[in-house]
Amino acid sequence: MVVTAHFIDGDWTYQKKILNFCPIANHKGDTIGRAVESCLLKWGIDRLFTITADNASSNEMAIDYVKKKTKERDSSILGGEFMHMRCCAHILNLIVQSGLKSIHESIAKVRNAMRYVRASPASFEKFQECVENEKIKAKCLMSLDVPTRWNSTYLMLDCALKFVRAFDRLEEEDGHYKLYFCEMDGNGKKPIGPPNYLDWENVKTFVKFLGIFYEATLRFLGPFVLDPRYRLKYVKFWFREWYGKDKGDAISSKVRDALKRLYVERVGQNGASSSSGSGASLSRDSRPSVGNASLFDRIKSYNNRFKQHLADEDSVESKSELDRYLLESSEDPDVEDFDILMWWKMNSSRY
Image 1: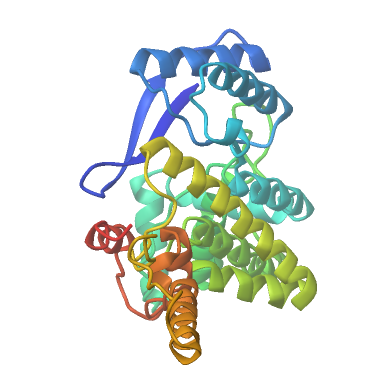
Image 2: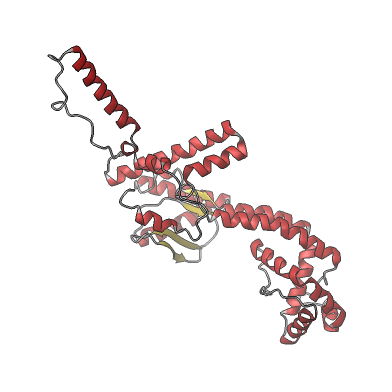
């Protein structure tokens, strides 16, 4: 089992460190939970926000165990309400693996063709000749996939499609290539292949399908609410696009409510005030005496106080840091190489 810590250090630099790499007796929830707790105790980590893990029942039991222990020590945030983060990439993986089964044979044929090319310097050299003869300019790396990692399968297939003509020429000119698919492997089976026209068409279609999921996986690593280019406005925009205005706004409200509860807890930890008021409210002694004033003066005084009240109510400065952050204008989303953590570092005096 590997435990990796993700955190932002004092210089606003994102850190990702492996804390533990150890064997465990079994994959039962309690066993995993005890191992995670032991790791946290050894490292002296007493504040834990989330644990991201595959969406498996044993992981759910493990995180429930950690949640209980941290709650008893008051070392979780909001009682561990958000502790279990289901790995979105893993959920996508389950969807894609299901789809991979439908064209498994075509993928296996391409994989075997790639394996032959990489089997020896002679076979690779012959393949390079075919590439040159077909005047293929692609420079992608001819690498085999890890069958359990669908994104590596996507990258392998995407690369192979650039060399279809070279594979066809290899089949015509290299007798060893054909023999490769007639010989028994170590398991007493013949490798299926080579890929034919229909196989390449299947792969072409599936690469388009996989590309959507590959892009989605990269997006999971991207912005959310705390990216100053997007903030809650971006989330609200997409919820409306997906679910319509009423349902979308209801979901956005849940997100905002969760943010507020997290913020209030954080403020409580720091012993800070939940709002940064402008200090403009009047003390009892500084309020104007209106007992002996004329009606006109009294009305004017009340109006002035009312205007001050409105200013306090409407002032962004009177709101919490979270409210101010969410209300401020977003940064330009088209700015290239935008450094989110540098933005937060530069604005750390405000937030």
